[in-house]
Length: 520
Image (tube, rainbow, N blue to C red):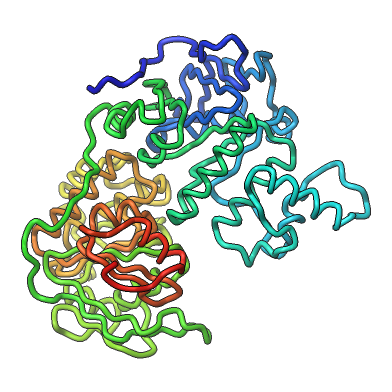
């Protein structure tokens, strides 16, 4: 192990400073039916500090954050504010102590203005609102932390990054001194992430404390003053940030072994063209969702489609899979036409498809893991489950699916484990040899160890000669795996570049609609 400043937590942890912590948790434990989510966890944060909570799914970081803001109460141990023990009986009680959480899924009303969303829920409002005064106050708070935004703008018209800014401004407007940011970069393009980090620094320079919850190791190293790593509900290490550690050390603390999430490209020359898209357009309810899309994917090649959610990625994948019929243009798989022939024909041509919607489209929630694995394999009236059960058990072990065997119902799986079942089915092959694999957000919601496994499986499929179309909002994933990168913006290809020479700033700008071009 490199010389990383970390310690395995074995008792109360404090920063060592003379002043009491702005917020601290002392040996807090939280139990849910059958699960010990937090086990004697110690945590503290100082004024003007960014302290990151890092861990796999189920490690306990969200539970700890929920206790720090009053959403949950600890079963044992206690929370302290400025060194004084407090009882946070609700998020409102947390806010009264200056603690607020900005959730990953925004809690805004699209039809309201920015200012109306910011003051929503405030108890000190008069019966008649002075909108001019409120707008001025919201602007003043926003600009003082480098978060300028038009208070009269309708939230539904804002970008994702701007909506997140509204959530942060709302917390600051309500007097928050400590902000818990839950996966704040999950839906942001690189330029928005850079701006968010600038905002975080502005807030800490003003004395605010930021608890940063993230699974993106590179960002954690960049933004954090300190990092607390959780595994299985326990603290495995307290680590110095800002270049004093690296992603390998953090990953090791998270999962207990070395993790390789490095760049992977095609190791063999590409072969024949497998997928051909020519001038495909799609009009839905009078809206052009896709406009004159043309590209191809070859044997042994992985093409990545980057873009912010809502720019036509889902519709493109569904059109290739035969679930939607293009308004114009043509699609062929393995040299045979797939246009307007439906999903069964597409699979008969060698398509395997991992859709974005796991439980709504990929799996049947009321069916078992075993039956879900059979969905794309058997079309017989009588299904021989017994012969498939050993393979189902093997796949559960291989993909580290946390379930009580093949008969476990899909609806009782966590989001990450449901994704693993879907990947296990599509990556293990069906009734027809796979020629083309279309995968949408394959690692979303997965632990870092499972991400490594999925990336290896995709690379193995590429090395075996399969053509892969990878559609993901995770730009790091696209940049690390794709041999070619296409950026989809408002239904059109805005940028194309080889993966090996791709520049994250250029790709990110294209995702935001700031530049267009090819081979940049």
